[in-house]
Length: 68
Image (cartoon, rainbow, N blue to C red):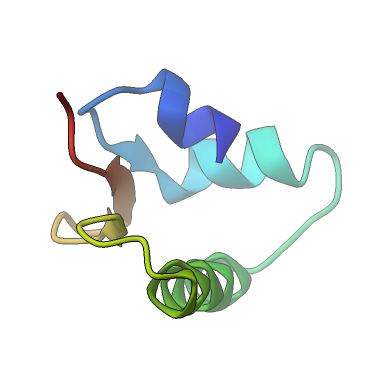
């Protein structure tokens, strides 16, 4: 999450997330996708209205949340 928070409104590539989050451990792209799905579900379950991970750009994600 920290990586996506630091990116602000910018999309972060799956490759960058793999490098930053999993460091030297090789993970498949579908591992990132499953993690994103789990995080979205947890946001919803926790009642975070308007908070999600936007994946509208191919192989990229960004954190979307209400700003004051």
